[in-house]
Image (cartoon, rainbow, N blue to C red; front, side, top):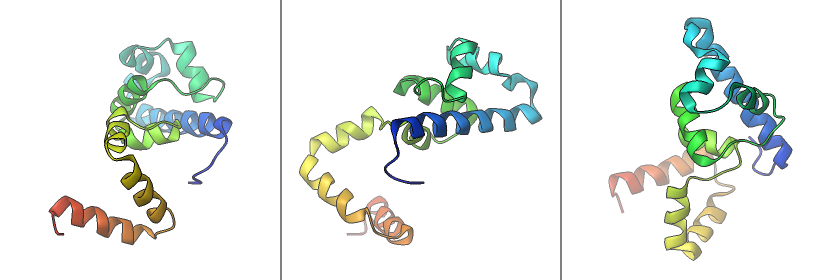
Length: 127
């Protein structure tokens, strides 16, 4: 996934991803129709349809989280596809903005395996 995409790219990518996820679930379970998913997530079916087609911007954080949960998708991935960052992560970054900005800049070009190693070290407390 490209890091810098136009806002239109976010809209289309988020919507098409949500639609593919919902349609995959619909193949196995008829309870994943657009209308039923929209109702469970608290959206109008017409609005969810427009989101899936990329005609309107992705919804807000809370709605994306509900949609991700409904579709069995990772919340952070869905938020990122929608061009958003969770309020939890924003709060973490705001607590130490200079350190996190530097960390993210350094990790920007790091290969995935190196980032995973850092994540494991932090998670395991292996300093």
